[in-house]
Image (tube, rainbow, N blue to C red):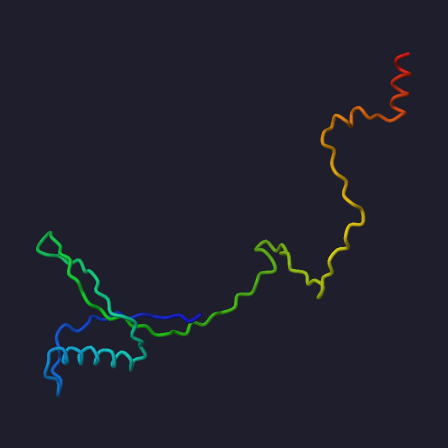
Length: 143
């Protein structure tokens, strides 16, 4: 991912005298063009112009807000990204878990051969059904 640095410069407020330009708009455009070309020669790409508030002191204790026009530029910077090796041990020397390579292909498990049985709707029927051995044992205790 590219990284950028930004530069913000004040927009020209007065028009510079330019040969061949008679109108105020033309001279002002030439002033802006001069700033843009100079920044472009230094490798800066023009982004946008902004009108931003600037709070400034007024008198001994007061302040006023002045609105300033600025030009915003950016250029790409090269930031070396050093790969960080993953640790294999903790600070105490205890080995960390490492991934184990698996098989290249994985097969689905075989389908279940037996049909699932429906669960009983209540447990009362399970209490009344007793095996013959249990019934005989209970009868033998009564007599």
